[in-house]
Image (tube, rainbow, N blue to C red):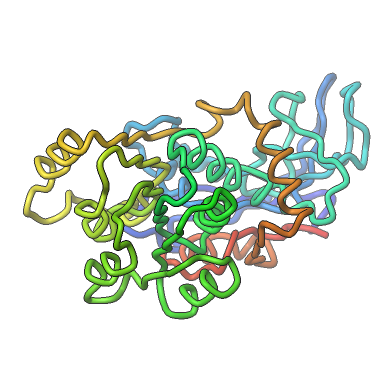
Length: 340
């Protein structure tokens, strides 16, 4: 990493289906100069998250797409390298939205100073957006009660692993759905889930029904597709379904093949009075981040939350790591270490 060159990974073209390396381009530019009231930030860690696939598309969404030849978006933990801002000194660590590049400039808007975290990268995971998403989606929308059954897809991912552990803290029976025997074993043996089903199993629906003999009271949805097909018949009356993502559909170029499930979904929601609510964490709950941070910090200190990171070295490896993320190859929260 250079003190005079800024490496940037930009969107070279919009993907059709799954992203490939040619959709990205690594560029080198001069490190930008700051003006009055600005800070120069050097990225230390970059968060890679599924929502970034949506930003690569120009389809209508809740946020503007990345422009062609624009820097890929992403949350970062950064160090202040130069400052003309009264609130920030050289050496301060901050969380910002610096994107896939070595250096970025900020006027202070949206910056969040880091306290004395043993692992600063945790501010992008268990104490950042994924943990916050898990916390608010489950507790505010899911509203789990002791003794209820909570099912979470992508159960060992950055969000799902936290969802399941919070549900256990709240006294629920927790069933995870994950990709492969190794991830399922981790969910049960390390995270404390009561059961975990491999979503690749031919008899997924049957296994899930056997694991949920009392039905499903809360289903935390972040996958969609065949997993939701297996969940839908098991939802109890007055079940709650927080919806934060649909990763199985992000690379789709057409609607799923028939039969048309819409009438079945609508009928089930009506007859069973099910609450299904999508949410965008910072837009809907950003004002409650302090509440989350305090609760999660305490649970971590008490050993009630376990957390795993998958750290990739080098900004240049971000595209391939991101492609792997969409294929489920990561083990835990995926971050890129950009600099020491």
